[in-house]
Each structure stands twice: as structure tokens, then as C-alpha cells.
Image (cartoon, rainbow over all chains, first blue to last red; front, side):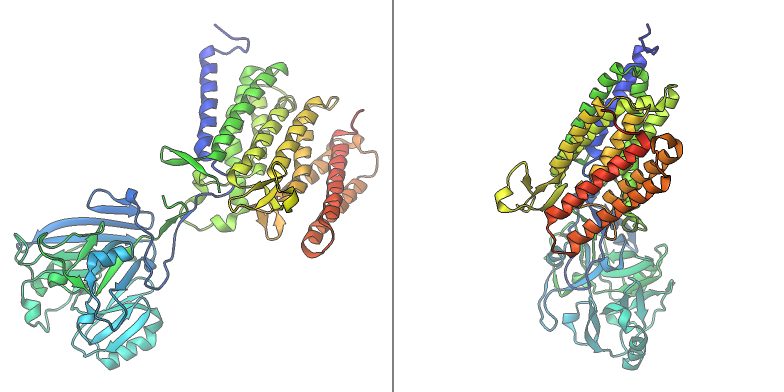
Length: 309
Length: 308
């Protein structure tokens, strides 16, 4: 049967249905004459304010988080009779790699890593160098220079404005002054613990090994694998079930075995080694009381939507 | 700020979007009924809708993005493609309307003027309803109204509780009046009604845009909602002078000079509103006269003298 317009009724029904669908699509495609729901990756301020709170929709189970500004993925494995955890992080902006002290500089305030992470809405947080526990070293936090008392016995880790990690091998005051003369304006954070595990893509030599380096313990390292790409490697210690812990040379072997590691730096390990994800410390034996620490290094979301959804 | 009523497939549905969807349904229904009475085959009428809906949306978004290009450029987050975050402009939608008319007419072997003439009242109806919906998105507001005139429908409260002139209601009512005016106008050549509707929209928007004191598109200090219609009217004037030479009996340069003079007066009025203490009523009165002058001049050149 043909209509007066010479088309089959079925074709007409199809056209009318399509028109109705197009009109219905306007429900979501025409929300406002102007921009009403705005979202962007922010540059977070260089201070101790936190990041944008992580979005519930960003979590993929217990092992990943993704939003347009940050991607976090957790993997696990085993090395020398020891379990390890690796966390891959990709940022959009260097300002998302941040630090927080547990209290004002000079105080001996400590707090559990999860509490510190919560204060700044961290997507992922790890313990720092526990600088309140010692009085030496080169300490910079979020652009504030707090301490410059190097002894030449520890490697220094510097994080610059581009978010790049650089290990200064056992600098003395003179070497540090020479570095500062050229790079001070670029330094955002600096840590004193070490040693450096990988420098310029190569595993460092096993030198200056003391008792603390040769004991089997929990270890944690912050690594860089590319521009704004980071890797946190944690290995369990003898207090963890089924793990014997790693010495520093063994830990170097583990860390340098990950693909693409350009720089890796050992941070405060033992019971202070902390990884916080989804607001919880995810490493270490569950029964162990979580040790309070003096500072965290954290990765924050910078994805800001107007309605926070 | 438009209020989100609910979400659909994870995307927000605002009160404005719901209003616009209903407005589109109403205007589409009116068009399909009206087209039959105007002798437009159903297939052509439906083809017009099938083209006008996506083209109108795409070009409305494209024009919005182009006008705000420095904001969108180099963002890397594809905001320009995220329609659901808002941002569209009437001028792109108008281009979509006319382009759809040309394409649908060609595909159905109709005169484009006949199809667009028939579609003009429905287009104006959609414009009227769309303007009324603008209030739902918190747009189309003017300056703060004096307390004695702070009541609906002269003024409406914005999200901060300020009573502001309801420019969107005025623009919506004007567009409704244009529906009536265009529908009753007779004796124009093919395509004349559509052009008359376009002229009415352009001329009135130049005034209404000046009333607005909210979110509007601009290039520096120049409001896109005034410059674009002025350019369209000027284009129509030039088209009329070239293709309808018999309708303007005087030298062509007089029409162009008259147009330029009226634009100059409108520009001076805008300047005066911003920089002088002259009465706003006086300035807007002068602007209204200038806009009417632009309309009549363009109409005279492109469509000929109105018949009694």
C-alpha cells in the first residue's frame, strides 16, 4: 500500500521514529545555552592544600583508579621469597605529585598515613623520609626550604617543577650549593633517605652498605618511568607471612627489573613503609598496628567538575 | 545555572533541556500539520525535520565553539565535543534551519523558498518557546529591576535572589508576535516569508541582546548577538541590491549609507549606555528606532515595500 506521498507507511513510521529519537536526544545534548557543567584538569597550588577528592566512579575494584587527571594501577608479585606490590601512576600535571607534613616544621607531630592521606584527599599516598626523626639532610616540602644540613653520607632525592625525580648522590654542602645555584627555583620537594636505587636508567652500584642496608626488611621506593609516570615498589618484610624481606641490593634488583625505570629512590622502610589507597593502608600485616609517620608523598586527582559528580 | 532534574545514561537532564525537548516536539508537530496545509509533501516535511534537527544542533554548537575559540583551543579535553556540558547559539541553529531547508527541498524537488516559507512560522514558534526556556537555564536576564517593578512577568529572580528584567520573556513574546506577523503576511515572493522572519529575528535580537546582563557571547566588547544579526541584515541588504534591483528605486549607495548610519547610531547608543549618564530610556528609545529603521530598510531592499 502506498500513501498519498508515494512512500510506504513503514518508511514513514521509521522517519517519524527517527525524528522522535532526535528530539529525545536533545534531553542530554542541549542542556543549556551556555556551558553549565564544566570540568578540567587543574594545576594544584604549590602549598599543603590537598587535591580534588577522588571520584567514586574512578575506582575499579581494589586495584585501580582512573579519572581524566590520574591513573593508578596496583600489581603484585614475588621476588626472592618475598611478596611485592607495585603501583603504577600516571599524572596529567606535575602539581599532582605532592607532599604533606604531619605538623608544622619543627614539631614532632606524627600521624598514621591513612589519616594524612585523608587530610589531602590523596588518591594514593606513601610514607616519605620521616624527616622529623632525624636532624640532617636536605628537606624541601611543596616549595618551602626547611633544612639544608647535608653530611655527604646520604643520597638526596629532588622533585622538580616538571615532576621529574633526580637523585643527588651523597652531596656535601658544597655540591648541594652548586646544585642549588643552578636549580633552586625548580625544586619543589626534596627528601633525605636513600640510597638511590636506579639513576639514569641504570642500577646503582652496591657501595656504602651498612647494617641497615643488609638486613632483610620491608622496603619501599619511589621511581619515575617517564614524564609524569611513576612507580611505587614495596616489598614485604620478615614480619609478613610468607615473606623474608629484602636487603637493599636485592631490592635494587627488584626495582631495576621493572620496565622503564629511569630513577628509583629508597624511602623510609620497615614498619614506616606505608601505601594508602582508597583511604586504607594496603601494605603490611593486617594485625600490625599502623605506625604513625611524619610525612607523606601523595598523588592527587586534579579533575575538577563543576558539580563534583 | 540550569537545574539538573535527573540523569539519563549517566548524563544530566536539565530543566532547560526538558523544556527545549518539549518545545521541539510542539514545533515539530505544528510544522508537520502546517506543512500539509501549505501543500508540502509529508516526505519533504519529514526530511526537513530529519536534517534540521542534527544540523541545527551541530551548527549551534559549532558557532558557539567558534565564537569562543580561544577558550576551547588547545584544551586537549575535547570539551568542544561534549555537548552535554552545554553551549549552543541561536545563530548556528538558524544556519542549520536554512541549510536543512535547502537540502530537503533539493532532495524532494521542491522550491527551497516554498519549503522555507512554510517552515518559517514553526521556526519562529520554536524560537519563542526556546527563549521562554532560557529562563530555566538562568539566562536571558537584564539589569536589576527597581523595587517597584520587581514582579513577574516584568522581572524574575535569579539564583542569587536578585530581581532582574525578564529579557527572555520579552524575546519569547516578540517571537510569538512574529509567528503571527509572518503567518499573515501575503504578497511576498517565494522565500519572502522566510527572509522576513530572519529579518525580524535579526533586528529584534540586536535590541534584546543589549538588554541582557548575564552570560552572552562576545568578541572583546562587541556582543556576538548584535554583530552577527547586523552582518546578516547587511548581507540581505547587499543581496537585495544585487538580485532585486527593482525594489529599491533610489541609488544603491544611499541604502548602504543609510544602513551604515543606523549601525553607527546603535553603536553610539551602546557606547552611551556604557560611558555616559544619559537616560537609559532615551538611549533605548533611540536604539529601538534605529533597529526598526534597519529592519524596514533591509525589508524594502530585499522584499519590497509592504502592501497595505
